[in-house]
Image (cartoon, rainbow, N blue to C red; front, side, top):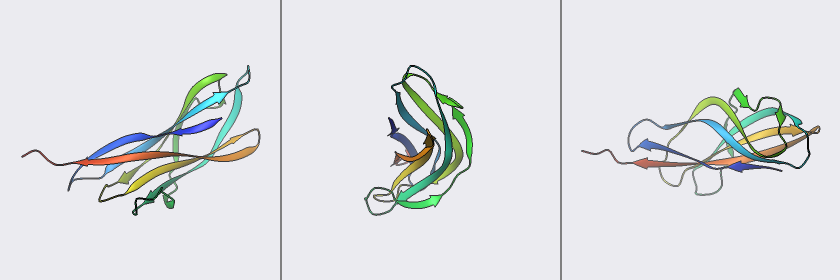
Length: 123
């Protein structure tokens, strides 16, 4: 089983957008051996209507994968670093990354939401 793990990012109201450059997935490998996998690609998603993100904003290039080739037995985390994407919270904006993971020859999309908040500058 592979499931997305939400992350939190912040930016200043009126300032630069938050930059999102990684996604973390929670993995349960029920086998007593490592299971090889590949990352087939990523999609950075957004929504401006309070709905779950579904519009593909970008297909960022993967920079690093940890662990790089195989999922260890038991519970673990899989972190994929990618070209940082801008995420600005205007009103009810939502962002996510969908990772396309291939295990045993089957590709599966796994989505992790990026909760983006903004703070007001202190005068």
